[in-house]
Image (cartoon, rainbow, N blue to C red):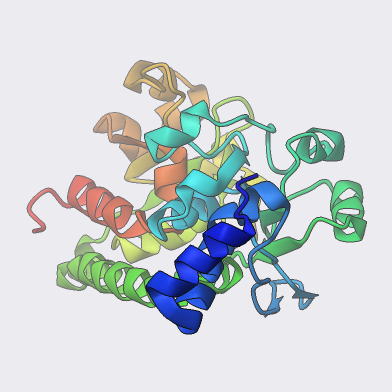
Length: 316
């Protein structure tokens, strides 16, 4: 620690006067605070997605669970505070160097605590339930961020995270930019006549052909991009039989990239159930990055625009 003796204090007082001395000492304390154990003033309490009142504290070591959560933290300019992320967080590139705690719905509390975070920002759908109960009981502040597949939902996420990080003004700026981009992208769909809108089915994978129904981020993206989801009659993800797919007659199959260049047209339409669809006749397959497509965060507007232009190439 740096010390100032009596002679030094007299010299400073002579040069700066009593008020100058006080100001100088405050500056010195602020510079020495990290090494002396001082902490920044705690942020105000926030009410999270579960209705819990949480005091985030200084938030100097943040663990983010959820690709949308991670992207929002970086968009707010607090990415350097992130000490760990979940497996689905792959953007921006800087997160690749952060420790990975695994799939956010299969969390290990021990793995999270080992990173010594002083704030956990977790997507509302994190799990399993028993791990979440343990997280709630920890001394580490945990803020659950709402899952809401709408522009208003994105704004709620940004506002909550910005408040937790003490970056409210940045939150307002990011929200305004994201919502403007979202409105512009979703506006592309308004130019597509109802009779020309294509039926789009999103599958998580080809093994069980689990398709996205209502209440899912994929369903929302399809609708905002001007598509029709024939699986909307079911809630969540459900397996689609060959008979059901023939009945729905999707024009386009939408899937997430596997990180290895697939799934390919041959793989998708080599599946017997999908081979009998109109989509197979036209080899109509669209593949988008998972976090980019269904994260409902800062980049969702770009995903909507990309999907709309892939569905309707002349849309601009």
